[in-house]
Length: 203
Image (cartoon, rainbow, N blue to C red; front, side, top):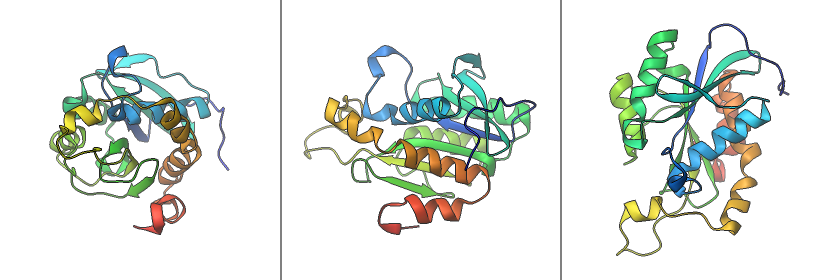
């Protein structure tokens, strides 16, 4: 369906950002789900996200004939919007052509939900993007990490806890869904992405 190894050229039409925190201490934590899946998307399209630009690690990829800038903001989660604002301003990319992949505690573990727009849902990285772009009208691909296991646990402790080996294996099975959803969004078919990949067919 999509060219997986075609080199992108020219200025990007879309930005696809995976959210997370930089540093080895945050690798494989629940809050870094966005980083995990943007890396998988890059691998699927034959690129490495390793160029430093816009306070982020970046790469260009051709997705469905569209040049896309893949981004992993390095500002820490709560300031993710700084990187995206700089990139959007430089390339004149509107919010509706910014796709964001991130973790969601309100979704069951290892589920996916695509949305064309929405609130921050209590996610600080998304709140930062809304603030810096001045819009909530950007598509998002949310990956369920499940609710905290008990009420007494601080939410911050939960999202910064590491996935177990079994959980990482389960997340690996979502790679085709998350990548497929992004690819459909980029070619202008977000409704098909929601129909195909949303848990329980919800929109």
